[in-house]
Each structure stands twice: as structure tokens, then as C-alpha cells.
Length: 105
Image (tube, rainbow, N blue to C red; front, side):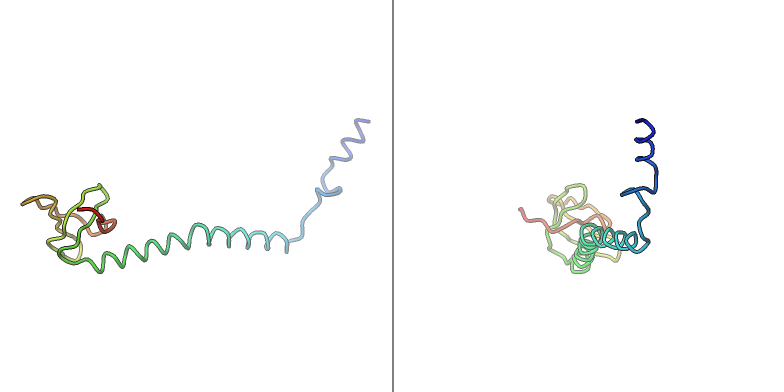
């Protein structure tokens, strides 16, 4: 009885046998396609949109920084943005720290 169970569990018998290499590659291709459409493609789209936002910044735009500071753009350079966060209070931040346009006053 115990020998029958051990024989039934032996590798290479029944459904536990070797898969064909073709099915393995098909499975890997499907797995990559799922990862691409769920993870990689949306992230690339967000990066493209953020890059376009930074290129189109101009004086007077209301922005939000990664630190959550809301302000108005008063100066621009290639790598930095000067943001006025209150009357006569200006902060210079890196362009990459701008995460979006502010929707509130």
C-alpha cells in the first residue's frame, strides 16, 4: 500500500511529467505581456506626461511640489524653478520636484 503511494508520486509519471519547451516559452511570453500592459506601459505614459508638463512650465503657473507646497512660478531656468509660496516668499526648487499643476487657490 505504501509502495503504491510512493510509486504514484514518483516524478515523470502522469501529470507531473516534463512540459514541452514551447509551452514554457509561450507561458513566459504571456507573463511578460501581462507585466508590460499592467506595469511598464502605464509608468512610461506617466513619465512622458510629467516630462511634457515640465517642458511647458511658464511664469504664472500654479504648481505643486513633491513636498506638497503650492505656489506660483515666478522664475525658470534649465534645472530649477523659483516658486512664490506667499507674498515676498520665494523658494527655488529643482524642476523634477514639480509634480503637477495646482487646482486650488
